[in-house]
Image (cartoon, rainbow, N blue to C red; front, side, top):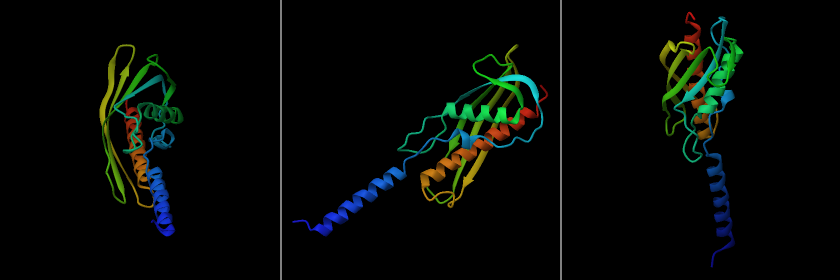
Length: 181
């Protein structure tokens, strides 16, 4: 026969296991958290821009945080709009320029107190009227989230992924702003 104390311990262990599993589920990088707050340029281009992204992945909650293409595009579009770098952001291929950003590599640690995430993305700016290449560049960024950012490892990892994306977007848009269009 199993004692009441043993059943209570087993029940408590089961509840704790469920809490740990639920708290440890990975979540997607948040588009708001990936949007840089400022771009180091006061340039205001009189052109419209469309944005397309690739190379991203949907997050598997049982694995680790990733960047979805739609969220990356939304973060870039919001950063462009906030910076007023281009006159407007348009959907589809109807812009004066098309910015394509493709994630080439996203390196994430499996465990640790501080998580360093490295991101590499190909940035390409094409003038749509004549298909000329205004910029083609690989942007490499990194971000290290500290142990005190969150007690939950999956949250710390997501925050580090968002930071690497935020830095990549900032560097990429600064490179675009440096162009003579």
